[in-house]
Length: 435
Ligand code: GUN
Ligand code: FE
Image: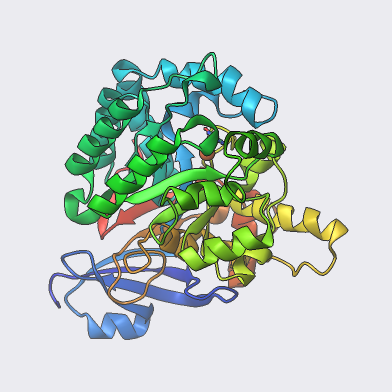
């Protein structure tokens, strides 16, 4: 593809395997005219092999794969960092009224800002819960399409009417019909850059009929499924009470056909060994949302327990229960969660920046079913890359050039935010993130 390729030259760092980093100090990522990576490695070699390519030289800045947010809620963004309380009262008081009022006008205002903020944070792929209303979802999808990001998204589904005073529930047939229509329209758009996520909220707010119907729609279209599982103790009690025949919370979803390799389960904190084994066996992934788990005091998810069982884990901001979209803050909270667990369980292995960076890239991509598409700079994947300038976050007196790759990621994770993001590429196409 000489002549039509692009070379992005900088300090390249990625994490194809869990527990290790690969780095080229003077490195490059090369992609062809279709945005597919054809080479990655030392700049000297790649320049010699691609003489006609367009060169984007960002040295001494850092080039990483686009980050992945596996769980976030678009309509909730205005409540980020504002609410209080644990899950069920928080939903009732702060979230349901907001989602109820999330009509077309609000969607038109918020959706472009939301996707722009994702890009500013270096997030190139995401899984999003959108509005409860079909027309508002249409607006969210139009803006997702315009954003240039890889967006997996779906209409929030909930139909259990007696559950809440403030919950904006839809009757089951209507919810399924709207979901099917949106899925047919948007799933797979722009070569799969947009995907549909059938999104039953959680077992507390859904009837069995809705959950079964949701699974059918997802199977029919090969769409993603996303829901919340075992986030909070009180939530677990309500589910046990509502579904007395189920063996446990996971079994509620299992019986409705909601588990499988296209399923992303948010939180997954309070689980028995049986549930973990069953999730692993089904091939479902988990969206670990540690900032949210701290904010709502939901609990400490034992990442190693899930990883050791073979479950794919990505990271999620879970805005607005998570106060920020900032993916570095989420990585940091994953480490803090492990450190808090280790107080009472000292055998818990350490979690280093290199581990959580892998979860925020490759793990997230795999959780979204996009593992062959993005997450690292392997040849054949899409050129999803983010350019970082660390000077805004480096402490006074420290020298970025003297830091090794682990230290660079540590700095990003402990002190980093959107100020670092300089350029963002999705499938080789640069997004306009600066005004
Ligand atoms: N469980 C059900 N709905 C929600 C939600 O909107 N946010 C979080 N964090 N948990 C949920
Ligand atoms: Fe959530």
